[in-house]
Length: 432
Image (cartoon, rainbow, N blue to C red):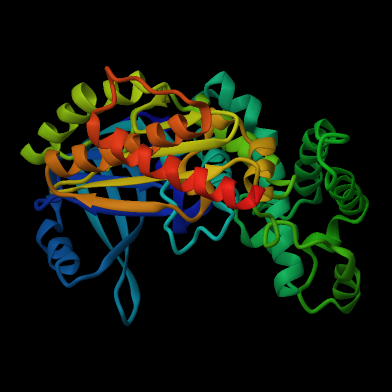
């Protein structure tokens, strides 16, 4: 193992220790270190000489490995494990002759946001989590571990975190969040000042483009001149007095507000910057998942494309001058979750959403409220998608008189005829 890898592993716990998940194989020869959503380190131990049985015993007692520390000796490496259980924290050690280290960087734009979390602010939640992953990756691995797109987004990530800190400061009356975030753990005022200057550069871009930008700029400038105000003692009465004018940005940032654009711009840029990385969430390796993936790729997606849906797996969108249709697929080991919905684009919220994000980039989660179907076989998937396409075709026929007998079967025709008669009767009564 070279010094670069050893320094990285030893630095992990001092950087962001609650971002770590450490697991091991049954004989302790491999340690997997999961770093948030952005990386995995696989540590391979060769010829363990001491304490294997003791460490295995401790781990099987349902204890949790929370930190690793590596020291080089003349005849090998000393690996110290810090372990937590319900009662105490303690350490045990292994000695081995040599180690190998593999690092895998993941596509961290695929972070999952649960439906319980998503309260009309999907891009806010996503952007904050992505920003933390990007800044953590940079802090742990250095600039050279980032591609050029990621490097260009560092200052944008800093702005996202600053907005989050301002919101937390207002919501909880706590003025120590720069420190507690760990991303700005160093208490040197120059660190906070540099972060605020980076955030200021980004917010300048949005002046004149979103109405909240000027207010955000003024707050950042205030903290540039008073850095201790954002990082001071939580019991500092003067600091609490200054909080009354701070807007609760993140808490009140929903998809129909213009500031949402800052978060959506960042999340889309992160997705583009991560295209070269492998997705951590792969299609499950079950026969069901493999067969269903083949069915969706070869049968369902061509139908969506034929009906003018745009996008790429797993999410597709269709938009005209009246409506927007969204559908996405999530393949699980024994089922497929389909998320889909259609929205009228002349409603206030959807109109605002489309001002904040290009329609081609929209996902069902951006709507917050959408339909979900769990399909257990290809027939169920086909039926769900067929109904979705049927609704679109009937709508197009009624609204735009678009009807193609080569594509639409007789059931669509009868359904459309009923709707036409209803509309004709309604118009006739209105004219009377």
